[in-house]
Image 1 (spheres, helix red, strand yellow):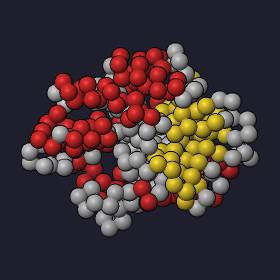
Image 2 (image 1 turned 90 degrees about the horizontal axis):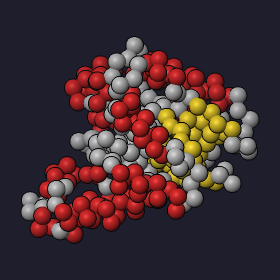
Image 3 (image 1 turned 90 degrees about the vertical axis):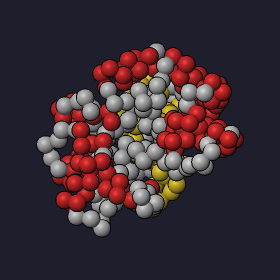
Length: 285
């Protein structure tokens, strides 16, 4: 039996992955008897400079596959992005399908397409990407290809994607609601339901929802996210309230208060494996 681990949102460059972090991840996966690691997007901002060397290192220990997230696309042409999309792996009694996904603003229905686009071009990372299609047009194209591939499958399907496939996993806080436009699309859930997909693993929103079943589909969301968002960072600040005299709950501010402290770095090293472990979804295949 092969054990497949799926992780998302490693952000190895922004999280300053070095030898210790990589070795800890390898050790954590080996302790779970993982044979195959699939990364469901946002591995780094620099595909050639950061991601490829990381894949090579990890491939010394595991079978490595991946799909892209929006951060991974920064250095890539549309042709390369398309070539890396929609990978199908026969698992014997099941099929594993990995694709990138995208968004169409449908999770932000109170704004017009033009309003969402203006917000994106002002605040969202993806304003840096070069695309020949609009976001809704790209989502239609991707969803059509997805449906075509699923229609051909006669075995149960496990999906890995980057973007959010259901509105249950969008942001509810008023400050962050405008960013829902760029999280994903409900059209993916509708297609998964139509073709009775069994499991879907996704990330992107940097919020862990664990495993939840919706309309018979088991959704799994355990993104690693940025170090400022990790439980170990939040726990350290909470346990040392004197280091946060203003009592701020802004995750970036809280992290910057402690990130250079030797005791925090020791805490990070002591608890990093636990953080990785919480960000792994496992399948026996």
